[in-house]
Length: 371
Ligand code: PEP
Ligand code: MN
Image: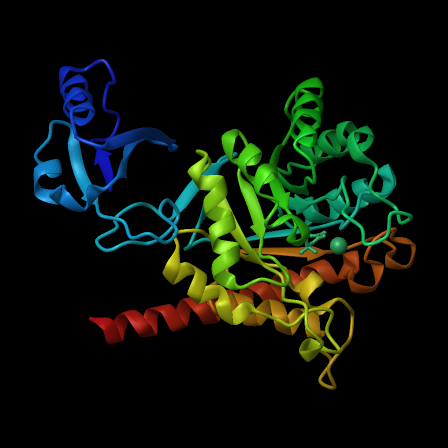
């Protein structure tokens, strides 16, 4: 059960103190307080843990300072949607809103290679009005002999160039908890020119100790990719690991699943799950068409499979697109074959816009029917 308190409630106020003393007298019930810092207000949520079935929603609603009460089901307790759940489905970071109703494109390098390529990428983004990107510094590779990413050494120039080009958020995969300190240090030493969204890759979806660690920090939002060989429900539970530790700023990423049934694509496209994740949880949903399709194959009508996949996700309501670009894909150290070219960026963004408008029209049609 979750008690949602009046916005901006003062923890020193008598009503808050009375509420806590009442809760501490409940038999066999523990509670955890979570502060949700929004752009305009701070929301206090109190999670009651234990056998709450005997507690009445009405009794809880009558307590001082309590505005709403949500009785939650077992599944996805924090991030899930529950009966009468009025909790928000968005969060703010770096002045941007990430929600189930917004859309952001994170085009960028799969792996940082040279400062020159980072600069070319960032400039192309700026020239096309983009404020988000993806940049891989820590790369989980199948072979230990493959390029593993430049790691912390590249972070200062990546962050500085991002700041110069007005990039507000960089999605960056981490594979170890120590990478958070390295990112923090580099942001600090460069004067915080940009923000970072920590990415947990598909190989680490069930690395529970890493999830717990990342969930304990509330500074950076997290993009969690679904596991490539586990069920959707298992991946959603993995997201819940982050939230149960305190970080509710979680975006769920679809990137295809591994099966030969998806051939000739690198993974089997799972973007039909966009509305499923939005129905089951309050997380914004990201699609990664690059790692799903895995190549620049092109249809007879002249549209890249990768752009078809992107449009399919967006027309179903996706909220974020993570997509690989590279100034010279032939020389990319990771995933060159799936990278789009910088001069394809305007066309890609226009295609995204077309699909988004189609989604918005579909939404309006559905809402007309609903009334
Ligand atoms: C990536 O985004 O660079 C990546 C490695 O993706 P995934 O974890 O989905 O394979
Ligand atoms: Mn990649």
